[in-house]
Amino acid sequence: MIHNNPKVSVVIPCYNDKDYIQETVQSVLNQTFQDFEIIIVDDGSDEATKRVLSGFKNEKLQIITQLNQGSSIARNNGFKVAKAEYILTLDGDDTFDTRFLEKAVPILDENQRIGAVSCYCNIFVNNHQIIHQHSPKGGSVDDFLFDNNSVSFALIRKKCWETIGGYDEKMKNGFEDWEFWIALTKSGWTIFTIPEFLFNYRQKEAQLSLDKASKIYHREANLKYIYLKHQELYQKHFTETVTYLTDLADRNKKNELKYKNAIEFKIGKLILQPFRYIKNCFKS
Image 1 (cartoon, rainbow, N blue to C red):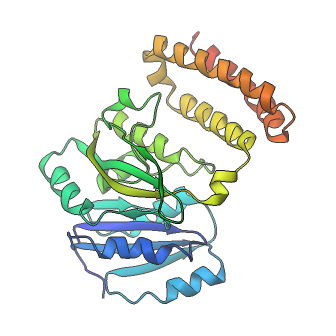
Image 2: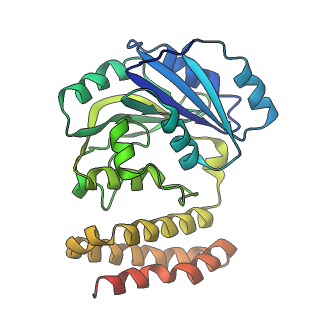
Image 3: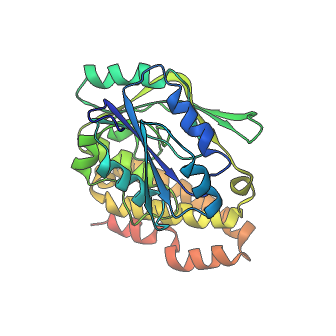
């Protein structure tokens, strides 16, 4: 039986995470703060993953299904059915430290201007070896314009998600979390970072081996989309934006020389004309 009035709803999009989803769910069930429900959004997973999901038998947990539509739509669908005022986002292959909710919930309770609470992040590979650590600072909108100063997953006020219209469902190739943080902070909330390593992000082999030219193409396309969507913010920070875009253009030239024969980069160059359109936007 699902708790009718939980304090926290944990939304977990899952796509073919049969090898990891049990560990992810267990990291939530092991939280020292226990007033929560778990909503797994099956994003069109394969049969092997569906069999694992069907094996979950816990009164705190429910599973909703959708065709494979990507993480933004999966998260939004989870938020729509969430009963709680606070929502914890978590992908189906990552984990939180058992103390995260215990530390994060009081922060939202005590400060209405904080829209989300995050933390520092361990990045690990499948043998649980930590290969990198990330220490974002959080903050207000100025802290997010040129860098994603939060990890992707956090405890969020549901009313923040409602106010900004959810995750941008047009963003299919990453950066939807960064755009969400910009929209949230642009609306007046801040993001608080607990200065402890309480989140564990799994770096899969497929991500490590992903063609670098493809990464560059999607990164530049996403940056262009974010800048154009929040154009008025970047116009207010003209000097910083020009400096950032100049540095980005220099890196693009180096990448073009290095990856000029990659088909993704050729297509990306034609589509993006790296940020010339954005540059023209700031002339107006």
